[in-house]
Image 1 (tube, rainbow, N blue to C red):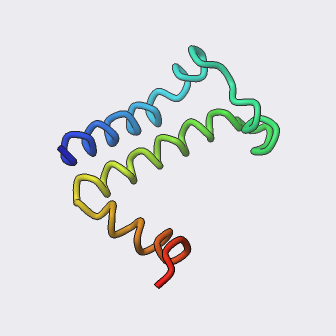
Image 2: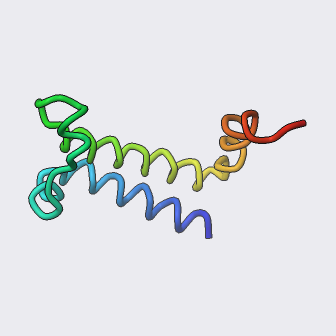
Length: 81
């Protein structure tokens, strides 16, 4: 199941990066990104960053490293040992 979900995340992230202009036209701008990420395409950059995060999470799921990544980063903060 992780393989399927991971591949879907990678595909959605790739489409989000490749078709940023389509997403911008159909879903509009992101107000926070426009205000805080500069005037040189804040929403475009935000859509691409969301796509990159999706690809990263997808690869973690496909390689079965998602839980290890969470424990290695957030686990040290949230879990007391």
